[in-house]
Image (cartoon, one colour):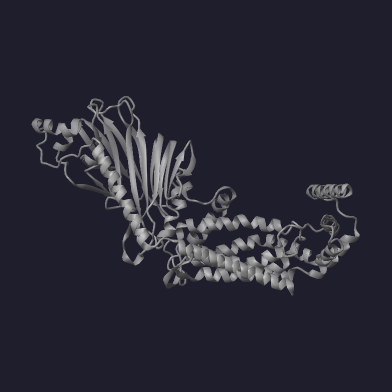
Length: 637
């Protein structure tokens, strides 16, 4: 009776502490006025810094006045501001005009001013409001720019984004080739060349110069700047923002990322590609000639998801373009497309490694088991994605059922030994060390390994963690509905709350509730058999009481933290726990026979004890040494 009271007190205490923590977090969150004031302050600082940079830099913007081509007087006048690139302002292309190239997958709009992509639209995908018909636009409305700072021999600093390029579009075979040239003369230019192949997300992008050794200062590399403010494309901006970060490949194939903090800066060497990854889409700049150094910046733009609803991150990159024999010559490519593992892998450029599948064994499980199996179920069989998740879960759990069986069998054996262990506990209650030694002898004599129940559970843990990485990265789930969930890659809200609950959110998702209920009954079903998996040790936490508390804590954590996660992951956990409950019920009632186990253990006790394993022998030796030291110390006293 006393133990039940203590357990109840422990649970009440835990609930009170948890409630106090939530209340403290709620009280300490900033008010809307504080958030607005902080945002206004940041905007003011940003404007002041931008103005200071503009005043300090010696830059020039090409005038848009009409100039007769070849007019030497006008060119001489323009040279006062544009130096060697005055010629570019005299061409018919010196106006705000655009050239569009597209194939079955993407549509690109390139501006004369700056020569860079001002619109990049993915023609096969829609934004989170799928019925609106609005396509995913990675670049639009000046959220991105590409600029090269041009250092001239007369000590000017010109920005290519402010100068006018001359476009020439031609078709070579099935490919569209767009040449954008910033001219310093009839045959002297800086060229961006875009090559778009049919049915492809990858765009060839070459940067080269010709005859500019008399215009540009080639003593140091040119500074290439690429900026992008990533648009929101998914239902939950906070969930999408969690997976938005800069990835890069460096040092011959190593993949790393710049971090997910409020503002992250990193400088790395020998970079061969830079990816501005969003949750399900990405923009990648890849080069055949690695950049010597790359300065990467990532800034979080979502401080309050009720206010900041358009952009997720601000990404910036600065890389040097080195001269070779007085000229620039870089073969590069752009990728504008889905962050889909199979699509990225098809390019054989290591792009697929920007998908966060987990490190070590977790990544191996995802790459070698989860991705091929789920890909087969979702595409080959042609099932609904929700049904595919259910079948996928059944296959995984059935494959793991032998491990579940071994774990339960070990628990059943420990349950049979419970009276013997209790007897030893009573007999040696004043001598914990002797109790441990005798318990180990009992295990050895009965042929029971107390660790046998833990090892199968540890084997299952990597699969559980791998699923937490796999489902948020599964592009196949995007905007695929199942039952009440309209998008398996986002939360399945069944009710909107008129207020926001800290940690939980402002909506109620149903699949996490079902998963929490399934976890509760699973833990309730198994906790009784796990409590006697090992004898209670003096000075150690009471595992029985901890397990009783975890029965309520685990479902609560599932309920809170999975409320804003993708419905696909919650569906997987719900079905997984239902299947485990079913497997455990069958094993317990139809496969494992407690009477046979008891008879086998009693028979083992009569036999000669097995030679203990090296680990058991070492543990026994340590306990005996401690016991001897304790007795020696007692004699001295």
